[in-house]
Image 1 (cartoon, rainbow, N blue to C red):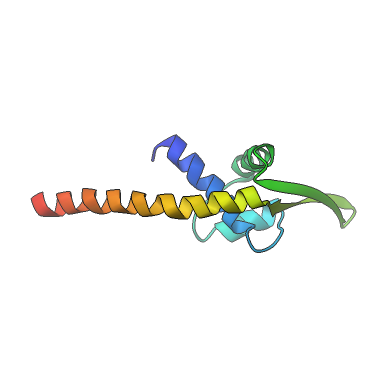
Image 2: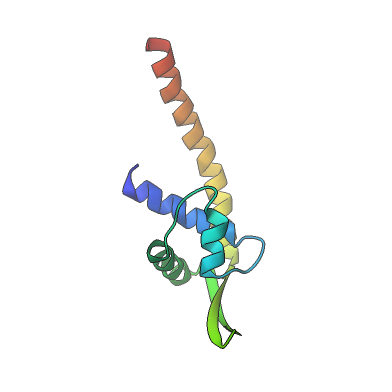
Length: 106
């Protein structure tokens, strides 16, 4: 898969994982695991990039004597998810065209 496409899809997956409630890194990885494998070394740069882009916010909370960072989607992050849903319709139409061509001539 194209690295830029995968990067964009992972960004959207992370936003979707925190859409309904604040979450922290390990929980995000667990929530994504049925759909896509994401390591900590992949997740944390994504979270920083999304925070820099103001698609999520972060707050620290004490948990078992340590600080745990919780991530919350912003309105801009929600807008990005909504835009992705619209973009995906076009991607699926392209996919159906490609598959149809293979089916018709294969």
